[in-house]
Amino acid sequence: MEKNKRPKIFRGKVASDRMTKTRVILIERYKKVPKYGKYVKISKKVKAHDEEGKYREGDRVEIQEISPMSRDKRWKIIRLIERPLVADEVLTVTAEVPARGEEKA
Image 1 (cartoon, helix red, strand yellow):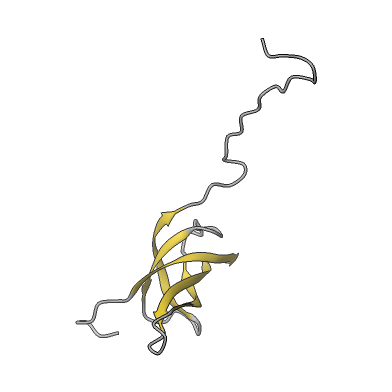
Image 2 (image 1 turned 90 degrees about the horizontal axis):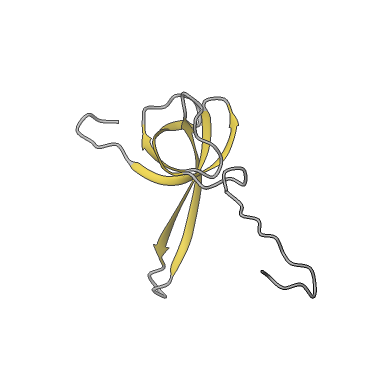
């Protein structure tokens, strides 16, 4: 990577968090087919460095290009964009349902 060149930055979703300090990021983009003018979804998986191991599967993150850390790892996670709610975090409200024939008071 040259000094005058800006590093590439992409947004993606964490597809796997099973490796130590490494996350697999799914990057999806749309490419226009010149002949038909239709857009086709293109997806690619890349490995990104996560030093603290704080990003988990399903998180939307921003990654930046870096010099190679290993054979496959050439990206690092810069920041978290969005973390989806997990079933444990969702508050559920339960209401008592009256039995048949009974009315609410």
